[in-house]
Image (cartoon, rainbow, N blue to C red; front, top):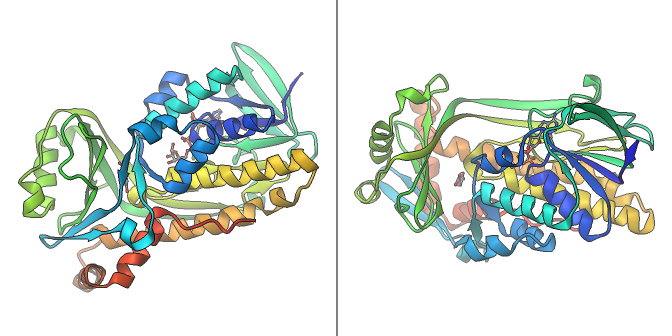
Length: 392
Ligand code: APR
Ligand code: PHB
């Protein structure tokens, strides 16, 4: 039977970043991934890193390309009622964010892992976690046609929202808190110059729109859409017409359209699992929580979990102290709930929810307040750049 110190299920950003940090401290891990490296690197997701995430990438030795090619943003625009209000992130908080595509980050992580010569087992099947309540947990899996068992000290469940590690925990030992939003995001990626140097979040009576980017030549746009919409209802021309309609005149006039490289519809939901530790099994990232993409917190929350778990494991192997590991779930959840609250609030502020005129008046009042009050803008900015860690 093969053995390792930490068995990591999932080679998404959470699993690979954890493996990388552990490796730097001489802790051995094996990553088990269901998909191929090509599939994992091709997934298109959000692209906004908090500065603490950038610092963690650097600590893991995988931040160089993000620092070189990422775009530093000191602010963003909130547009509504044909007006726009800039949130001066740098001025209000002293911090910036980095625009860097998650698929680029995923590529950096896969490359770093192969450079260490340490394994990721790709295309594993039927992963199951056993005996996680004991000090000798095991992970069984099928690889290259045969069944294997991996003995380990700890299991990190980094297998995303549909993973198996959470499913292996008896239902009565965990609680799930969920909110589904009554709409989705239709995303489009195109090789056209972004319409603005900074991101533009737009509230419009026809629904929310976001103008983001991946580089100076590649744009990422989103439209709020009904959940039942199908991609074939959204040819590129309709997408760009609708986006133009939802933007203030000064932005609409300079929007450049171009053929979609990718188009997708994702439903929006919030979900938190409590606790995030079961014996020697730790849930990390999307395996434990999902946020709507509006605040771009998904990847950053995953990185924050990894940071905490890596610190706990390093402390454990260095001096056999279980203290930080014991605090993992409570500390992670404290940050998760704050980000869940922010993502819910930012989503509520900007999307069209109902035809109730009272609710709409409240929403307009809140946007006006944001545009006039430095305190309200600071509240948004502080959450957007990422709350500081309450360090152990
Ligand atoms: N066995 C092995 N691997 C699995 C299994 C399984 N049964 N189920 C899922 N996986 C793999 C997925 O194929 C995926 O590569 O686990 C990985 C989970 O990665 P992500 O979904 O990216 O989750 P995470 O690493 O927590 O990333 C968090 O990044 O990808 C975004 O939307 C995500 O923003 C969020 C953040
Ligand atoms: C993205 O570029 O995909 C993106 C950016 C900011 C967000 C959400 C998504 O708030």
